[in-house]
Length: 346
Ligand code: ATP
Ligand code: MG
Ligand code: FE
Image (cartoon, rainbow, N blue to C red; front, side, top):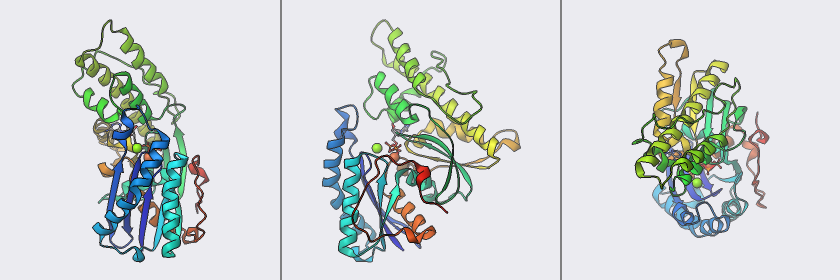
């Protein structure tokens, strides 16, 4: 079965073709980061218009790369939510238009399910069940995943998402949007002993997170400098921030592994691309006490942030697990707000 995937929930237009026999055939992506940068964040109306411009050229590019004729697609998966309404509508209307023209079934995909399952696209995918840490621009959640569509929420952020904390702290240091990668890079040359920022909820016994206080601590630190920060000062603040947030993320993962007794941890979402996080998790997974050891799985770097491949893949997995979800009803609707627990499951 060949599934076309369409992602347009925020500021990336992603198209991909996934074959349940041959794996990922091709994918193409356009990121709007440069366009939104001058506004310091995503401008929804500009995002929608750009998706309109990019979707069909990217679709043609993907079909050509995969050497697949549109008529040979078996189903079309598109991101139905959550995300920006106008942006989602573009992907949904392209999916519905194509479905109608080609007489192919559609399936609406939950964007977070796409992120969650993206590590399964890697060459050595984890088996179910596993614990998933979803760390993206809009979400920070720990989930237990028992199979496709079988997700239970173990804990989540009470305020800012991890990616949001990276971006907001980066902005306080004058870095461009989205600042996650930039603040991490800067942190590498920073001194870890200059700023000791709080580790919010590190010792709360639950699996929830809170990052808004950390952002405030960064703001307070920046304000304490009597003059404009030098590059060195910025690197030191960045280091303090990155060390603090990673300590919390790693500690909560360890608690989740201990509480559930599972031995596989999967990281998904944009912050999963962070090298400091990967290094710290790998170290934790290799604990000297064998009982505390676990295996960590990551998506390919290019599939950490938004992309079409994860949507095509989630569509294929879902259609195999729940074929009745395929629809030839082409009147599209999107779900800008859509809690993951409302997904149809076994
Ligand atoms: P959601 O999926 O929750 O709707 P989103 O789609 O905007 O949100 P993603 O595309 O998964 O989120 O990830 C984008 C986020 O990841 C941004 O906040 C960005 O700063 C962060 N990010 C990307 N790369 C890195 C990195 N190397 N280090 C830290 N953060 C990063
Ligand atoms: Mg994005
Ligand atoms: Fe995302």
